[in-house]
Length: 130
Length: 229
Image (cartoon, rainbow over all chains, first blue to last red; front, side, top):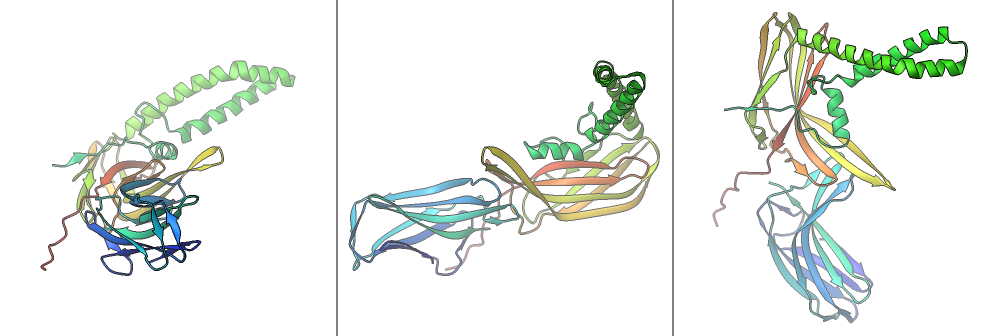
């Protein structure tokens, strides 16, 4: 689990499968909890969760999003009360995660915390492999 | 029931150039560029040299080379094409290749049946059949776009010193297995992972024969075993 921090706000993604390197099979159900924590009170315009793949390596980046869920309610983030959201999505059959010489295919859960000025983005990678 | 493999399906960009240079017979009526180009250049030099002997000034020499040389290059080109086709036709026919299926799965064993009719006696010094994974990437740098590719040999099968008599078929079956951890064929706009079968045949006294066939590795998998709760 990585944690992205922007000013006073941090995002955690907890896969329900457990900790460590997350490996899913094509067609599996991905379930995760999103936790947004802030050290000081701040207004958040919404949270958007998406799941998808992108390429890394020599070529230009190609990507596809297979799932998007917006939690679009204006909420007040406070130090004492982290915001928690749950989502689940059925993973597609392909493309599988891949690490090659020129091309890598990376799957990730992406969380965007929308603020009034700049959004906080967090990415939690996982492996899709049969 | 096996599937006949086609030597077509050449991809865009850099793949096309490479495939053309690899395949002597790809264009039935065409010529291998690597032979024609040097031959044309040599002819141009010879003609230019002959004209230079006659010419007494540089301008006349250039004029003579342009006016007299270019039509002669054309004649040579057509004649050369005719000779080349005859040369190939006297040696062998195009191969016919069958495969268990042109869409395979990881872990699957497949057979490749290769058949080629030879008109003249020869022997195959070495024949190499390779299962290749190709990574292809296109990238933009400023205003220019470039491509890069890597061929990774996954499985290879070899035969050597195989005699072939005149007017007979060279027939051989190759058995190969797609690795259990193989990646499936993947196509995105700027990134591709593709699978191919390369055939290389070294025939003493003849130009080496090379060809490439495209296959697909499917992302289909067997369902996971049920876990008892």
